[in-house]
Length: 234
Image (cartoon, rainbow, N blue to C red; front, side, top):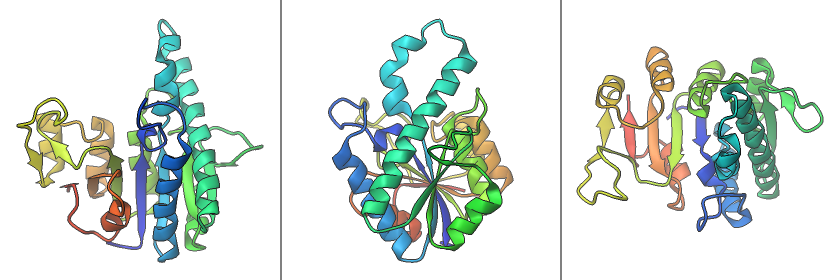
């Protein structure tokens, strides 16, 4: 694995494990400690955060709402997560910066590609918030986009299952785990690795995707080092 990677964290990485919502300090601190460890080993890490732990908990408020407006609200939720993660990473002993696709100058830098790369070169963790800055695009697509822009070697997608299955393993005990998949297999089988736009962008830019279980201690480092954890899409 090359030295620069993009890590996609969904809102689940911040949430209370019992409810699936909110920001759970102990959960965030565990994730931040692993990211800080990766950074302190000399890897350059860009983190793309989701906001489902906040916005999904308020999903009833979005009923009947204009889609673009609801998406912008979801982007703001990612900024809250990014700020919480930055604080936890710095308390864990690594430098971090937040860049957002939405201009909120009082709390974070605007997303500027060359500045983000410079932060990475200086050993800082860069946390990308606000998605792509546009409605109708998911944070998975934002992860693929930022990974391509910063020249990352791979996209690491942290989930709460140990890879990609042909069915939901939480409801189907006979679901089969895939070790390796191609981009086209993901698209043709309709596997929920990332959305189709993100998969296509990774395919066009030759960006491998590693899907792994973030709840297993040490898995972020294993994935960064290129060890055989979870599912590899290439």
